[in-house]
Length: 268
Image: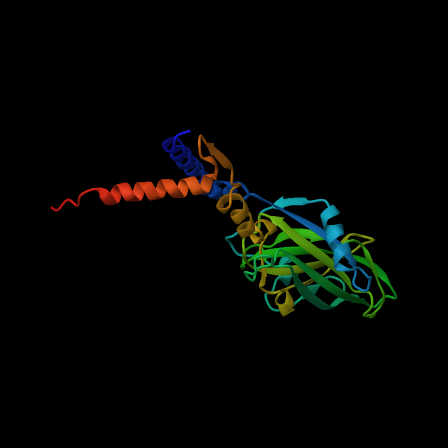
């Protein structure tokens, strides 16, 4: 195989690489309409190590939701006459979200945006005990609220601090890097009735969480693996043994540079 043929093939491969790179925005656009997540929930005092949590998340079913709107204004949940931007509100005074905390987990590309996070909720009640669950909503940089996930049903005991529960979520795809607010809607598990709402205006730990999906979190690694370092093949040239294809390309570029350099300089 002649050196010219090899160079032509390498040029063709480079063209395919450029086509692949320019087609990436098209793929991202296709993902704009939907998003997918994985979630698990557990009692906060349960003894679950990180390896077990990772396994549970891997085994969890992916939930496909409508992608979060990137434009528009949000209204808080609940009856219109109770909408407010500064105060939490409730339907049943017998229940109260006493405390909430958030935890950012795993940032593979170290860009400050996390595809995995958890929300821990401590609910108090005037009853001896009750069964509740929570729905979690996200808002992308001030945009409308969008439903994300629900916890399992949990039993709470009066004002105990030992009955907190946690929902841990992994944003699989469809979530742009940015700052997300979180809103919690607490429900009575026996009657599926909304009880209390709690969000970023009540607790700063639910405000402006730096999040992104796992695809974007691993994009740099994927780019390096798929585009920058393709598999090196061996090319056999008659009479010269085997030679790395990248070495051949380098030699070809040197020959081209020398040929251009040998041309006489044309003055205007």
